Amino acid sequence: MELSVLNIKGQETGRKVALNDAIYAIEPNDHAIYLDVKLIMANQRQGTAKSKERSEVSGSTRKLGRQKGGGGARRGDINSPVLVGGGRVFGPKPRDYSFKLNKKVRQLARKSALTYKAQENALIVVEDFTFDAPKTKGMVEILNNLKVSDKKALFVLPGADKVVYLSARNIERVQVMPATALNTYKVLDADVMVVAESALAVIDGNLTK
Image (cartoon, rainbow, N blue to C red; front, top):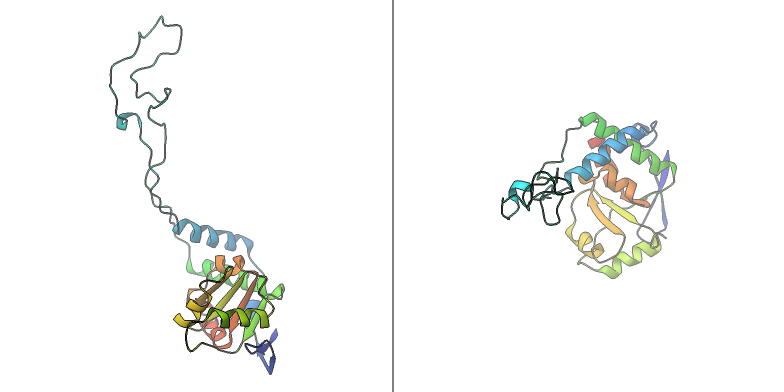
């Protein structure tokens, strides 16, 4: 599959790049995508939720009523889970939600996500660019020139570029990241991917090792 290389004015440069079929034209594996997205979301969880159990609630341990003859269910002290203000049964405890996923499965998931983007014609290749200084207006002009200002756009650069990142930081629905940090969730979450020409080689290197 070949794509035309555009400049930041949205004009064709006359050059084309051939996308690697081993990355952008495979048979997508939906289950691998599910597992990788699940892993990414799980790793973002703090896991600090905590509720007090019966033994941790502050209150007297005196038995409130007789064991039998009261006409209702038996209960113990005021910390009982059946009473308002009592402890919670089987409540959440601090835990680690992360789990292990094989490297090849994660690579397959990213390839599958990129294949879906290629099939949807949601990939745009642009010449490498940067700004002299952070300028939101400059990034807005690029979005308008590429006709993606109304979409959730993901800009993929060959490396970390603080100037471009700061230029896009205040624009809603626009994200900038280096190719080395690209993951399945970010690819699927974006409506369109704008990939710098040099970033294609970085993506190839990461996914064809």
